[in-house]
Image 1 (cartoon, helix red, strand yellow):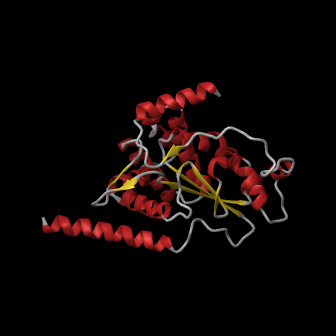
Image 2 (image 1 turned 30 degrees about the vertical axis):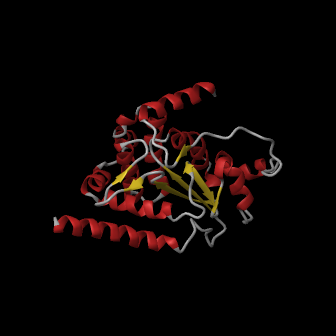
Image 3 (image 1 turned 45 degrees about the vertical axis):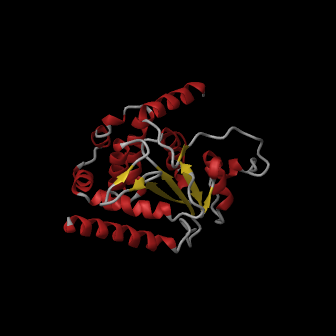
Length: 255
């Protein structure tokens, strides 16, 4: 009994130390270079996170010219919650915790964006298509050795990575209200997150203006006409995976 209490206390202390390390900063801060920082706080089984990665963020990654002015950062934690003894629960159940950890391990194993984003995209595309139990097929599809990622999430290091993402997400100011939570140069975009490229272009202070930003010049954030608010997964809301799948399918059919 004493041993279990000691382990729990140490786990909680570890989390507090990680949280304290992030508490002095409000969020991802603008970089010192001309690049614009873009951070995505998300969870793997939120269908709206998957939609954003597959149908919006991928357009940025595919545009080498535009990507050259951006520092893109992914944080796979979202609306999960810490429990005792180094464990946590996720909004869409245990499978989401697994995939959050798998994606955290992939980001750690392959730190360069061009190496880990294709894997994250592949997994999230399967989520988008409601085929996420087939996520391991992404290794073969992309010609990746699964060893580093598998050892990470089965050996416990993935949990440590998730605790770091938890502390970072929980230290955001203003606090995140839902996912996907998109932040450009330290400023959350709230419900306007699908228009993130416009905000990137507005924030860019360099001289090598990408073509995509030239095209954006005819649009004004402040003068934009009213548009529908994109769907999100709110924090503090527990939704069954089946119900979320029905909502996702309905949303896609109505597009």
